[in-house]
Image (cartoon, rainbow, N blue to C red):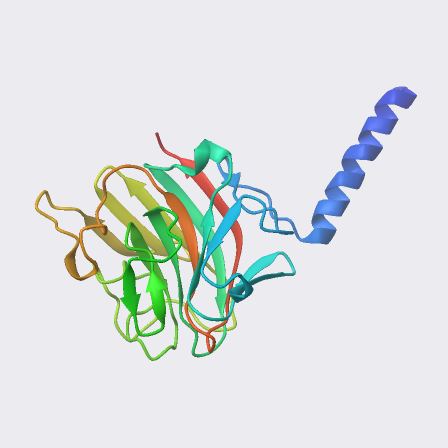
Length: 228
């Protein structure tokens, strides 16, 4: 039987303890090449525009519930500036809830696009989170660009994963690994209904949406893999 010295035994013990702690905390293993943007504990690296009370943290998730507000990633990774990337966000909605994940956006104290429930970012694209809200545009839609109407690919009260890939002039959206959107920006694209800011151009950051006081959406395991 090989002899294991005390130093090696101590190292093994520390590794086992760390693995046990991670398992107990429910910390998922990151996929190769991905970096986590949220520590699961506080809003370090995030900046909220709109009522801050619309966002809280519960059990390792960012919970959006309240007046229209947006939490922007403002942290150090890639100086919160992403152009070509794959983003994964685990999401859960309560019945009747609306939310969204923005990409290629930038921080705005007051969003430039005004809707019935408040102000929303005028730059970048919103990937819809909505399984049963009154808005017919459902989860996975590239909002007001490629809309999935009525039938949602996900369900309320169940965790699902939105995967958003931006590469060149193409955006691909998957829900639980099933592709629901593939859109390539035409040379003459002007932003459509959402205005000129809804265009693939330079890099931007990520934002999570609190839509309204009657909506409750959970976001966790927010991780990104640069593709450039």
